[in-house]
Length: 324
Figure: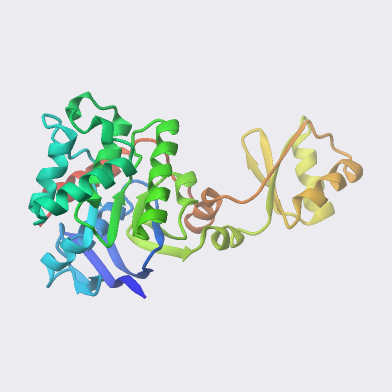
């Protein structure tokens, strides 16, 4: 059964189309991911699905409630962890959760039962009386996840849940997310531009320039790339490239000092290179296709894992100024 159903969803800001007629569905209990670069439309989509941004065209349902017409029911069905920090750091951890619980109409009894459960889930129960301003970035992120769970949502939105965190802290955050999925049987919809995070998803929608260009499991998406990728270094680079093309009829890509080829079974192909080629090989590397390769093949460019470009930042600023 689907907890999210989206048909031809579109968001425009004047002449700029942030999200362009996307359609997809998410099943209950899935970890579903939006993978794409900064400015691709990921956060705008979450904004529409969570009723924070008005829809220009198309329809979307959350837990069988229309996001445009049944906003209160949608909001009660979801938890939301924003990309940007949204905690009050002048309050204690417990007070942040209590304020959120009151907004959602939880009784005092419900809150008392729930607060211990969610804080223990993210291992912050012992820090409940500490001011949030004393927390590290990772602790704040964990508290935001706990806050998003306090009202028993059926669906949790995580918008770039580990953005700005160091790799070790990112790994810890994912431990909590996976634990959450196990213990709560909750549907999780997340956005990311980190490849290793997308691997945790049951299914991924690759989004670029406001459009979904592919949607499937990580493994099936990687199979679409083709075979294994072999990268070679050689002092006789041109000779090696010509020989690879002539002898094996391979397409050879030049990437800086490296040559890159794609073969069906790399482990079996490598010995042939050393036994059959005349050109020297100084170094060789074999790797399986990655989601980065999938994105490159589908869009012709790589996903950046650094800060947004000036153009992306401008688009983001336009979206923020023009919301609603």
